[in-house]
Length: 134
Image (cartoon, rainbow, N blue to C red; front, top):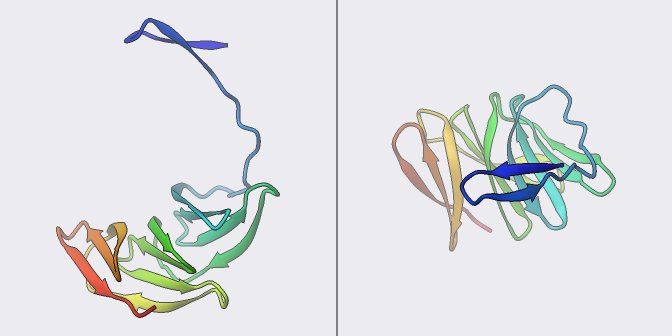
């Protein structure tokens, strides 16, 4: 089967998925590759770490009270931003937040790592720069 692309007058193949991860009935807001795994943020406020080849969730990071909409990873760390206006830096060895960053007044919509800092953007029209110990 082919889709017709009217802007280029060419046909692009339609590709079917090779698998599916069982997320249940939760909307998925963000995906992030990390160390050969896949990290997801969903409407239920849970960060899940997946083994995509086996199609299984290997860890759930619980703590946000609202939807997780942003993720960033570096080295052994994962940070998540959510509609609850917090950023959580996770200790994946214990599945608990190592640090909770709470200075936004509205949902955290994006995250970035800039050198030794985590930067969080929010619907409160601010970008916070956090010094996070390694």
